Length: 215
Image (cartoon, rainbow, N blue to C red; front, top):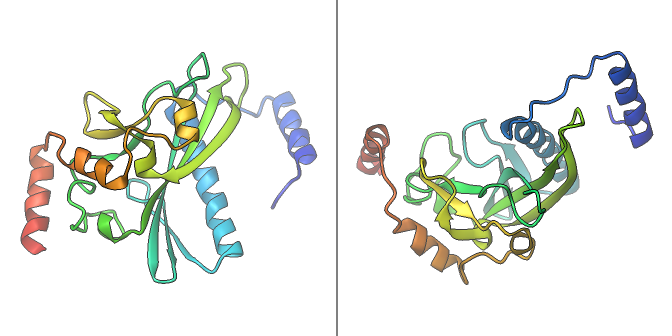
């Protein structure tokens, strides 16, 4: 059931008055999870209704969030949410584009929780949801902005975590909006990150050995 803005505001006011509307936690994961479910639901419905593409939703811990197949080609769509910093010039922390030591590094292998090998996609598309945290509101999210582009166009030469094997995006919001990452071409992006000295733990190595043996 869909409601227009006036009806949504009326419902929200009634819930707030009755103290039935509980604020989201302020931790980044909470707004991000709510945004992800809402946006992916919307995209799934819209793509199915307005295009001839076949659209399938991924699993919670899998990749991608949506797979689109059209005219014999496959497209991966992945969602990311990030807060603006206080100056509203960049994201508070680097967006993670992908895990660098598994699926991305070995594009010929069909890893668990994926639809198909990385290299079988015609494009890897990121849907970035950028927001300002509002600690005074129940919904926490203000000035929601969406940026859509291919993964490599957002790529930086920095990891998004010092503790995990993640490929990071550029921080500047203007660079994200203009899809101006640190790489001039997709090939340059792929070569840099596939040669990056990521660590591989014992469990991942065992999984990799099994996949390589069966490939």
